[in-house]
Image 1: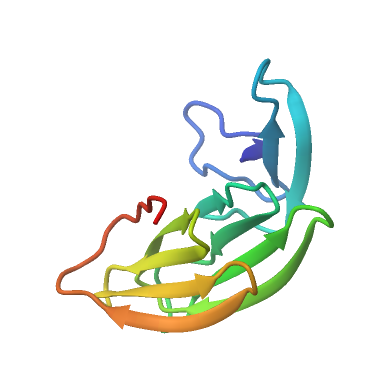
Image 2 (image 1 turned 90 degrees about the horizontal axis):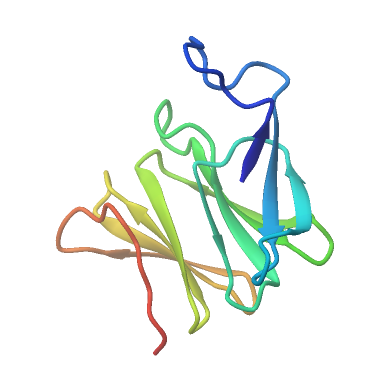
Length: 140
């Protein structure tokens, strides 16, 4: 992701009003610019599906309300947010699996929220035996 203009050393606020945020893609061989998708706000986390067709963005304040966060599904072919789901304020980490799921760790609720990525179907949450603070997935 990029921010324009970015923060300057010594700035009191990292993101001044009017800052524009984008999700960027880079070519694998030369790391040249391969695409950009403007974002409505600064996400706290992003994950791109292995096939490059969709990105998931975790947005909203991590505090300040029972359902102050949102998980957004961004179609990278059209650049449009196709789905969005409210999440609780403890939703802090995001990961995607090559097996077709997106996961959000809810550190305050001791659970994982799940989405089937092929159909963008929200499955709800599953309880965890402890506090999830990060998410990683591997092929099934």
